[in-house]
Length: 372
Image (cartoon, rainbow, N blue to C red; front, side, top):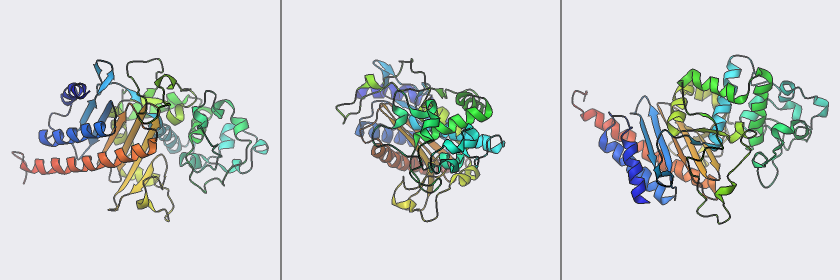
């Protein structure tokens, strides 16, 4: 295992930015490799991008037996897909084709007399920020079922009364993002995949970002090490149905490129819609704006982040409020408690990246020809 990690690491280092400080990058790479070993993550990609740092793209472990994972290979990104759906929605709000204050029932053409109590008040803004008030059943998430209620049974889904008033309470909803995808399709006459592709191409050109290819077996996804019931043979989902909430794929590099172009600091400010009373520093999941979680750490430094977790994949994307850099991490395994794993990885990589940026800043001051 260690040998395969080192083989993949050697290949990955060769594609890192040639100007990156060698010692700084070696330290960052070592810390990431230690994290993977500590968390039993067999393979992963990492990308760091920004105007204040040299670009770094790394791959660790094996894509499949005897084949090192490369920085080029697309991986499932689970709920990082919500960044793509959200971006397409924000673009449609900006060009006035689908304003955020649009009522969902109006966009979908649903007779409000047949909708459940409170449903007629749901706006796209509510869906984007997970504040729709939609009822979330206990047990398996509805969007992970073989035949989820969205998009096939939207009329029936919206005939049920809301669990809470639209806009009043944060409750994470994959179904809500499916409804956003359907709103885009109905209003624009384009599929969500085409709408997302247009948003991406306009910003970064050609990329690996697109709907997950379920038939592609070049990457192996691993069972959860702490869940004896976890079976990789069951890692097949209704990807077309869950596209808006978790059905896209990308490599870490292309997601990081997109974040750098799509979410500068002024755009991030508009996405922070959490109420003032929200105690951000008490936990990273306490606040949710539009698309991203919004978290103030104990030093008062704000970050916008999104994670993803499905059997066989853990993913994170982070953009600090200053947006001078961002990072993306995608692994081919999760633990049973995927949220806890992601928050541990978020903290560990966040500290490692901060140390790397400080290291590079110090190294630049000592380079020949640099101003001291």
